[in-house]
Structures are given as structure tokens and as C-alpha cells.
Length: 178
Image 1 (cartoon, one colour):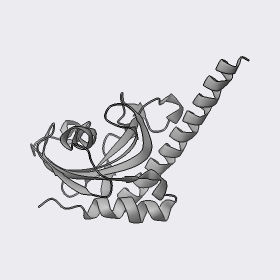
Image 2 (image 1 turned 180 degrees about the vertical axis):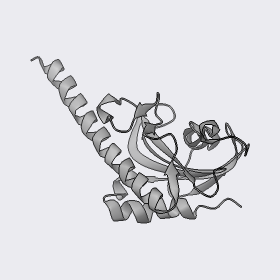
Image 3 (image 1 turned 90 degrees about the horizontal axis):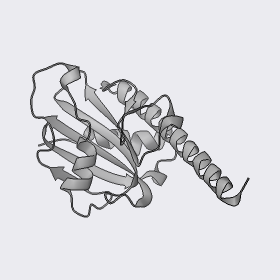
């Protein structure tokens, strides 16, 4: 095998490992959100450049993955967790987690009409100029939401299930829209 072929193989092997770990992160997040009265929107769908199934991480080649959740009691609110590997100009970055809470613009319709996909990425990458980590930002109308809040943090700080719960899930659930 040539050096170039070996480099490509090693790169893709490492990418698959990253995506498999990302899938585990989201499956754990799904479990914690379910325990807190939320349900995953759109089943195993994972928002990325194109929608892929969370159950098949080897099919992914993307710069971000996002999952959306709605509470059983109020489907007009959606919450989102995303992991980003590139910035808005598609340059590799130190991986970050972005969380967000959004109020839907329209309240009628069933779950199939609740479509927040793209909202978290647009809020973080388009609505906020030069976002800083560990700072909460309010955002206005994006896609089909009236308003929302987002916050980013480094992925490396979330090393286990307990850290996921304390650093991501709890702050996301506590994120209130005034």
C-alpha cells in the first residue's frame, strides 16, 4: 500500500472512531433527555450536511451532528444539542458542543410539522458574530422559531456520563426563554 493510500485509510479509520464516539455521546444524551421528560424529534435522524441515521455512524462524513428534543408537555419548545468539528467557514476547530432552546413560531400541527432542523447551526453560525464559548446568546427569528438561546462549550470537557448530565443536559433543560 502506498503512503498516500495508508494516510487516507488511517484518516478514515480515525474519522469512523470519532463518529462512533459521537454516536455514543448522542445516545447517552437521548437517554438523559428522555429521563427528563423529553423525546427525540425524528427518531434516529441526525442533522448533518445531509440527514443520516444515528444508528449507522460509519455512514457519516460531516462537520457537525445535531439532535433535537421536545418536551412531552409543550411541543412548541425545542431543545438541541450539537457537536461541531468545523467553524462556519468550514475550517477544522477544536470540537465544541452547542446547546440551544427555541420557541416555535407556529403552534399548530403535529410532530411531523415540527421541523427545527438547521435552527441550532443557523443560530450559532449565522446569527452570532464571533461567538465565544461558555456565554449564553439570545437569538431572534430563525427558520420556524420566534426566538431562542444558545451556548457553546468545548467537547473535551465532557468526558463521561456524569459530565454530560451536569455540563450539557442540566444547563440545556435550565435554559429559559424570557
